[in-house]
Length: 280
Image (cartoon, rainbow, N blue to C red; front, side, top):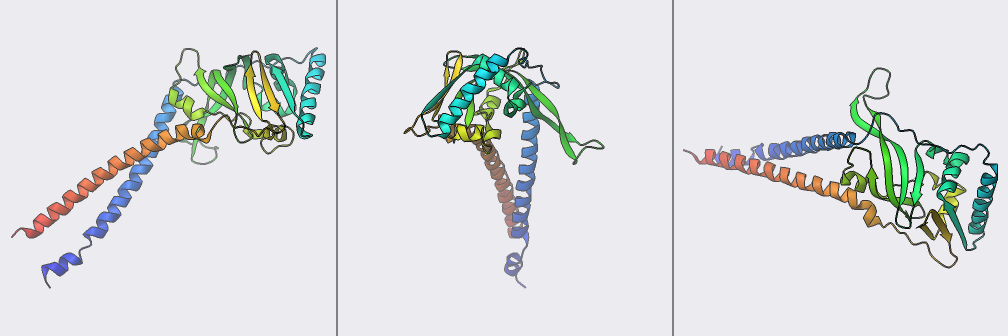
């Protein structure tokens, strides 16, 4: 049998493809784990192990204010659902009172409180629960990988917008006393979907879907439903995907560099094999 036929039946090329695919898979898994832990380490620098105490308004002796607020919101709801133009202005005090009193907003109690509102930005005191660094589960915990909760305690500075019939916060800054929140985390969190839980629910969800505008004013938020005016999303899909695109771009560059390295190793291996085959 000639040397040519031996080379034609050589399994080296098939093995090389298999090894390359295996290396790429191992690299992607390793890189994903690296990014996850690196991200967790960065987040841990400005988060805390315990939640901050966010004040909730007392309802004692607030019956007149509550009745007035309920009537105000109900009038707006009826106007929206009857396909009439309607506006609703809610002050800082009214929003905080609504969080303390109304059952659909109970999830926000102890999690956020409106500190101030200006035409440019609203400030929210927050204590958001986040997933901490992944770790092996202890006895009695579900699964084999879990994490301890961490808390983002500080103040959010944000604008308000609409996105596909949903109220969202456009984060401009996150301030944590004595710590610096990296811009990448802020861009990844924005827009923050504060009202996502209400989309499919009657009441708040139905009204929110028909809004044509949500605006910040001096000391209040204005919600509008204007007949003949189509809802205009103030947060675009491009803004939503911006942080995600940065991550995928970084990942794509890393994969390309790794593939170039693997290709170089394979070319060198083919060259050495060919050279060895031509030696007397």
